[in-house]
Amino acid sequence: AWTGPIVFTVPATAPTTIDGSDDDEFIAGEVIPAEAFVNMGVLHVENLVEGTDVTLIDAAGRTIHNGKADNTHMEFDLTVRGVYMVVLRGGQNQILKVVY
Image (cartoon, rainbow, N blue to C red; front, side, top):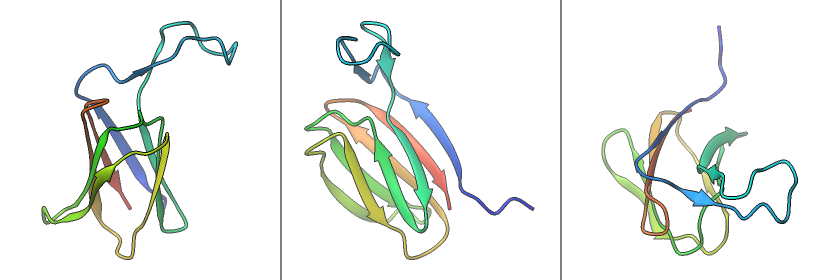
């Protein structure tokens, strides 16, 4: 049986775009959505736009964290296995659902 995390990404609107000048792997103007994954009990959220409001919510609807992204990556220690939602508003609008 699979014991790893399951991650669902549901973009609400167009997230980050890049200009393509730093990496030949991407096309200029390509949309790069935020991503979330769990590794060893730590939730990693990547491809954030600085200044985006980030809210981490558990399955019971309790707010675990509420703040602003000050760079393109955030980490949260998850002490309990369960279902979490990362809600992004402002700089990018997106909902990430994580099962840990």
